[in-house]
Amino acid sequence: MADKAEGMLGPYRVLDLTDEKGLLCGKILGDLGADVIKVERPGGDTTRNLGPFYKDEPHPEKSLFWFSYNTSKRGITLDIESAEGQDIFRQLVKGADFVIESFPPGYLEKIGLGYTALEKLNPGIILVSITPFGQTGPYRDYKTADIVAWAMGGEMIPFGDTDHPPTRISHHSQAYLHAGADAAAGAMTALYQRWSTNQGQQVDVSIQEAVVNCTEHVTSSWDLKHINLSYGRWPDPGHELTRLWPCKDGYVSWFFWGGPMSHSNVPLVELMKSKGMADDFLLNFDWTKYDAKTTQQEIGQMEEPTAKFFLAHTKAELFQGALEYGVQLYPVSTPSDMMSSPQLAARNFWQKVEHPELGATLTYPGPFAATEVEPPRISRRAPLIGEHNQEIYEGELNISPEKLSTLKQTGVI
Image (cartoon, rainbow, N blue to C red; front, top):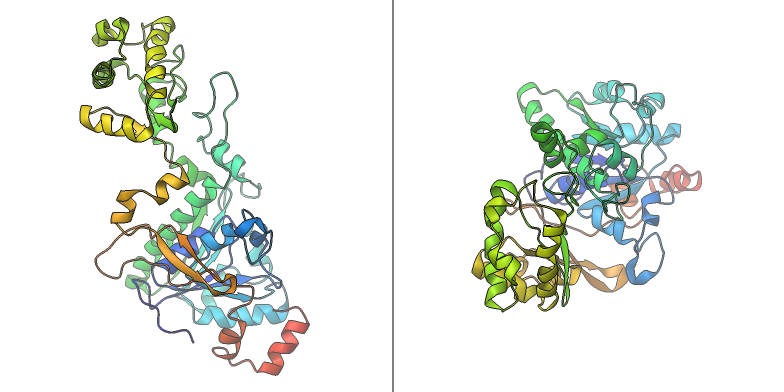
C-alpha cells in the first residue's frame, strides 16, 4: 500500500483509464493528493509515443507529453478486455472512489464495466466519462481529433489571417485539456454530492461542450453585433488591424482600439512621442472619431510609424514603457521568457522533479493554484510502464508472485 498521500484528496483513490483526451483530469486529482493509479494496457499506453521526447530520443519512457500529464500517479498495466483482467479491475473498483475514462460511449458497458455494473460493486463510485460529444445525442458515436472539437466547438472561427480559412491554435490538444479540467471539476462536484447521499454517479463530459464554454469572447460579439469575431478585424468586418507586432527580440501584442475604447490609444502615442517616433498623423488624430467609419488607409497611417517604433525596441523596453505610460501592450513570452520570469520565480511556480531513471532532474510547471492549506503539488514523476504492478497486485490485492508471473506471460498485465 502506498504511503497515505498528503493533500486535499489524500483519502481518495482514482483509477485512470484515459488516453490523451483525459490525462489532465487524473493529473489534477493527483496533484490535489489523490492516489491516482494510471491503468495502461500491457506494454504501455499509446500516448507514450507522443512527442516531444527527452533529448529528442523517441522512446515510450521518454515522452515529455507523458511526463507532463501523468505526474502524481502510480502506474500498472492491465488488459481490461480479458476475463481475468476484468476480475482484477473489479477488485480495484471496490476500493476506489473515482474511475475516469475516455473510451467511446458504450465501450465499458460492452465489456461489463459500465456504471451500472460498477455501482453494484461500489455504490459510492464516481465514473467520469470524457467523450467527443457526450453520452447522448445524434453525435454520440462520432469520433474526434483536437482539430474537430476545436472547430465544432466554435473556437476556431476567430483565429487565422483574414485572407485564409480559420486555423487551429497550438500543436497539442487544447480541446482535450479543457475537457480534462472540466472533468476534474465534475468529479469534485460529484464527490461533494456523495458526501450528502453516499451515492456515486456518472459524470458525462463532452469535449465539444468544453470548447463551447471557452467562447464567451465569440458569442458575446454575436449577441451584441451579430458578427463572427475575427481577431484580424476590428471594429467591423471591413477593418483589418495588426495585433502581433515584431520588435527587436520577438513580438508584442497591441492593436488600436476603436469606438468607446479609442481613448486607450493615446498612451501609446505619448510613449512614442517621448522617444521622438510619433509622426504628425498620430499626434493630430482625433481619437474620439476613431470608429467603424475610419478608413483602412487611415489605419495604415497609424500602423506604419507604430511598426517602426516597435522594431526599434526590445520586449523589455516596450513593457517598461507600457507600465510607465499605462499602455495596454504586452510582450509575447517564449518558453525561455517564462522560465526566467521574475514573477513566476517570486511565487515559486516552477517545480523540480527527479527522474532517477534518466539521471536527471526536470523542471515542471507548478500547480494550478496556491492554497494556504494542503496546497496542490507534484508528488511524483510519471510512472514507468508497469512500475507499480508488484506494489499494487501483490501488496494490495494479495496476488501471489507466481500468479503475477502467469498473468504477465498470458498478457493480462
